[in-house]
Image 1 (cartoon, rainbow, N blue to C red):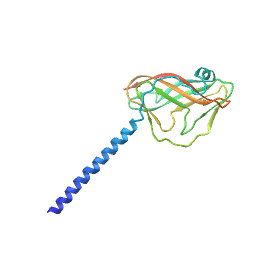
Image 2: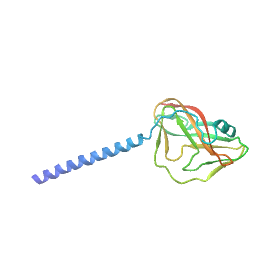
Image 3: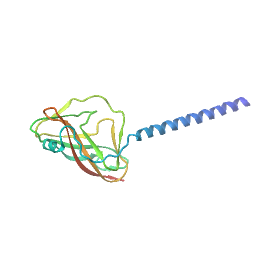
Image 4: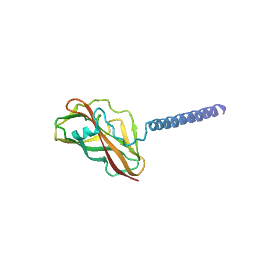
Length: 179
């Protein structure tokens, strides 16, 4: 009779140990994702060209979220139409893994960074006077609504001018997150 009792006792100890390990693993994975969550302020930033000069070269119009009817806790993208107002072509990365469009949010949204794909995309050339609709963020970045309300944000386009100089253009936008 003792032998079956010891086997039952051992299986209970193993079950508790395995359950504890699984619970710890699940919680640590969730907490690791949260460490990349941060709040951002909508401050204009540029690289080698100022936003004032960039605004003469490019514009972002029709900045919007996708889906447009955003609800908590939806994950979403930001879309915009790039207009090339410069006399020369501009170039930016665009493909399955890359996006030249990113956003920063003042409130109601968390940004998480995960492992994304590493394939590089060929550069996209936008001729003078042309426009194209793009979406962001790049692979490995997730935008997720965590609270409802009016949300202030900035969209940033990173590109290269025809002479090869890196530049960026930042434009504010607002949208609503529904409960």
